[in-house]
Length: 484
Ligand code: NAD
Image (cartoon, protein in one colour):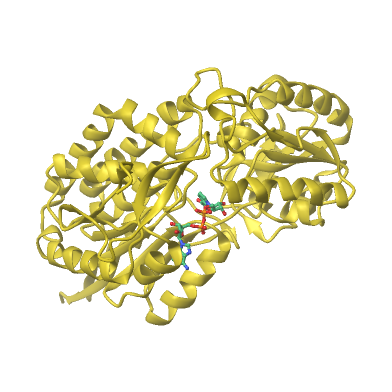
């Protein structure tokens, strides 16, 4: 034993160690130190979790929707009651600024449970009348055991975004958080137990993707897999799960365009663009990483933007003044830095950043990257085509709407896009033609949980959010009744 805090799996309502007894080091990105240990689980732990979920499913599936909703609301209340502790835990685990965890990630995790509690009781199914013959009604029944696999960037928010609708629809889950940021999922397990969620309804298995995640995706009794993470992993999951005809929802990478026209509301655009580029150190799948600026505005924007970005504070994420905390891991830090070399080799001009940052004191060994702006690269180079997922954006000039539309869509990804213009017709015209699951006009990250969420092309298959999520987590069956 090391004396470090040990995270445990949550199976059948109990906090238990992994069968193999093995643990992985869990690092605090801001300091580079190991501060806890997370189970290095394997398929035996997944088998136990699926068995527990299968047993709980029998009664959870027939629990009235109002009671399921009440249980979800108890979990939401527990999250809200522990907001500060959860936010601090997420900051230590992930490296993001505490103010972001406190105001966005953790409150949104509670909102997920609240939203899907209400969706559970308002969800309705269809009926179709066949004049003079009969009618059809569609039964939407829960699937059984669902696998939920989530990434490290918004650890509790995305974890609950998957779990809450699955439970609302009457399923039980086997969920795996990222091994890089396991702490808030562990704390959620404790809260679920305190909130009297029936044993086995949520099971959480920690560990590595190729072991635990792959075992969930491959398990015969797991009827659906909802995954958020990289496109490469999504493809691996599909390879395993699709031949078993599991339902699949894959939310994957992005390389999102942010299109700025000269007629935009300049001050609002500038302020939001700093946020949409660098929130969470650029580690939000929806961050705009390719900024297209209309020629006549380009120089003004470049000067003001670089000035604002250069003034951002990079440092200890627990400090309330910090704008950018640490990036999530040593490996990710290296990956981001390697793109600076690539950008230079491709002929890019780094206008600010382009280097690691080393704060003094507590964080001197942490993994920090200066917010970086690059110009002078064509859209088809690797820097503009590959997902970096860090505090790095490129600037490109455009003259016409057609030109920027072609460049924005010239990507394997299609997650989100942002348009800045006061020209209403142009905004609508472009929005319909952009290859993106969500298009923001004159805003960013404004979310209505009722809307379908997901990406196009290599960014995603399936949609989450709203009733779309409850449809995903149910099996529609048609009952046809002859009446005449
Ligand atoms: P990742 O693909 O490395 O890991 C995601 C999850 O999958 C982790 O829990 C991991 O352990 C697991 N995993 C890894 N290999 C697996 C396998 N073979 N089988 C099953 N599971 C496996 O992604 P990441 O680095 O944690 O997250 C960053 C990525 O997530 C970025 O590409 C980002 O764009 C994407 N993302 C997308 C969205 C969205 O809504 N589209 C949201 C957030 C993040």
